[in-house]
Image 1 (cartoon, rainbow, N blue to C red):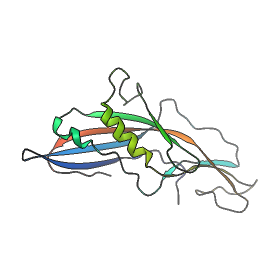
Image 2 (tube, rainbow, N blue to C red):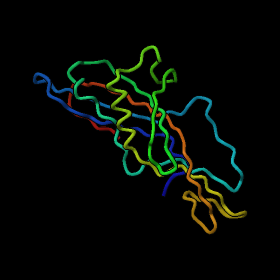
Image 3 (spheres, rainbow, N blue to C red):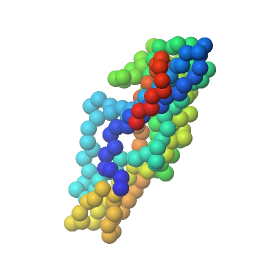
Length: 174
């Protein structure tokens, strides 16, 4: 069953690489960005909105392997992704100058932006859905019931990705 609102996602992945006998751990953390001043949308009493839900597990981007040995500082990439009516991600675009996102004056390295863009292009979702219930019907979490009309809608969401190098053993957090 799909929840009505899926407000957060926290993923990280650890990649290890040998570097002169020293193990480096590359960690990527991601999260859904809730924009400031965002609020609930008023819907008619007989309608409800189902937030898009990831299909299985959408893997986070990988730390660019060519950059592992450079000892770079943490890099943050924010992307606005479009989730279409079929649940695919046909496009994404960088987000700058928002809370927890880089400024347009200091963008992340292009390799990190490319890694994040490639990852989200492979993501899949159960599409956002507007459910319309017959008058007097009881709403539920998955839009089921007699004469319930559903309409998949495209939405735009923003995600933040943090790329970090950490000395030590591999860590995977979900």
